[in-house]
Every structure is written in structure tokens, then in C-alpha cells.
Image 1 (cartoon, helix red, strand yellow):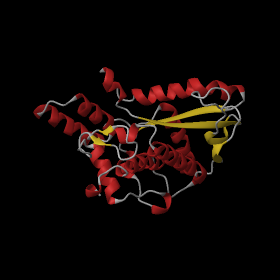
Image 2: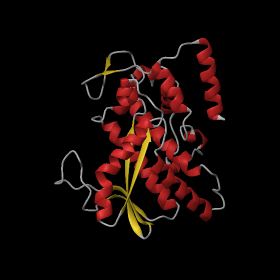
Image 3: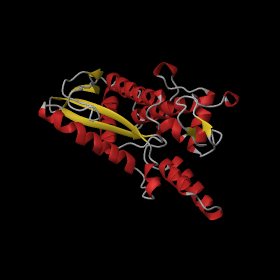
Amino acid sequence: MANALYGEIVKRFEEKFVLSPRQRAVFECLRAPHAQDFLSVTLIEGLGQHMSDVEYRAILRYRLMIPLFPVDEPCSVCRKACLDSFGEHAIHYKELPGFKYRHDWVRDVVCDVLKRAGISAKKKAPVNFLTDPLEGRSTLRPADIFVFEWEGGKHACVDLTGVSPLGGLKDKGFVVGQAVLKAEASKVANHEKACLENQHVFVPFAFDTFGGLAPNAVRLLNRVQKVVNSNSSSLKVSNFVFSRIGFSIQKGVAAQLVARLPAIAL
């Protein structure tokens, strides 16, 4: 229903208005698979599935392209750049603390979903062979999530990454879903070989700020959803796992936006 609604909105907009490249790209992102999953989540505070009124308004304004910040207002956190009116700087500038918070929050929820499904997993697990490509072979890094006996008796290293789906707008080559595919491919190139050489499976988990998911993330969540359905008679909802992950992504984005809103907007 959500996809149908956005489809009708886009048709009416195109009849009466000339959409900018960013507007057209955002509407396409909102119609992509899993972008609306967070709307069907059951609000449960104990699972972190709740937002304040301010957070929810910020998410809706971001997704509906309603300006959030004054143009050219200096970022109150980094002090190095000016905020754009739609909040892209607040969400995608990697040096800001909120960027890591979003990654860690989604990681924690994915790990919790695995454990509640009865799948043995551990977050930030040292594996002694993954490295940070930016720092070379001298720096070992833990797996975001380590899943025991995930495939063929082998353990899996799950590595999360969140990206902006609007990057292609800069070179006028925007394609919906392209950003997460590139992020997934980059993770595979950096870490899959090391995992295979050490008898482990590598699973990249790439997502974008509107909730879009790369194929490997979808496959992982589909498998977890099947386990949930087989183990629970009360959670036989096809998108239970996806809605929870989608909500965690939007909650992370909301935290980044709200942290930079002027006091008058809170």
C-alpha cells in the first residue's frame, strides 16, 4: 500500500510540477523494496522500537523533503561545514559521532534479532585476520557480528555499512539501489578473501538511509525470518525481522538529525 501511495504521489507531482533531480531520486528511494518496512513495526520500548515525537517528525520531514535546517547554518557538532537544509551533512559526514552511533545501533539490533531467533552470535568479536583497509595489514579489527556455524558448519563474519543512496546525483548517474550494491562490493573486495582463507564465511550487510538493503543483507534477514517463523507461533509475520531492522535504521538517522536541530525546533 505504501508503494502504491508513493507511486500515485509521484504521478500527481509530475503532472503539476517539474521535479528536481533530488526530489525524483528520493521518491524512487522511498518506493524501493524495504524502504517502508519501518512503518509496520510494533512499538515496543523494551526492544528499542520507539521514537520521541521530535525524532519521528524529523524522519518524516527528511523523507518528505521538508527543510530541516536554515541554509548555510554552521554545523553545531563538527564546526567545519555548513548544514544543507535537508540534513544530508548531518547524516553522511563520517567524522561526526552520530555516524558511528547509527552503525552501532543497527549492528546491535541485528545481533539481538539473531539471538532472539536462537542463532548463536556475538558482536565486536575479535577474529585476528580482518584488517582496516585504510590502516593496512598492521591493524586487526573485530567482526561487527560473528555468527557461529552459519553455513556448512563455518562461522560467519557479518560486516555492516550504511551509505547515502543519493551519491550518484553528483555525476548525474543516479540509479536506485546502486549505492548499497557498491558498498557491498567494496566490503567483499576488502574482507572476503581473508575470511575464506581462514575457513570463515563473509557476509556484508549494506543498507542506506531510507532503509534500502543490499542482496546479501536481504538473504541474511530472510533466513533469520524463516527461523523465527519455525520457532514461534506468535510471530508468523512475513516482515517481522525486516520491520525491526528498518526501524533501527530510521531511529539511527533520527538521532543524527535531532542532535543538530536548533533549540526552537525541538
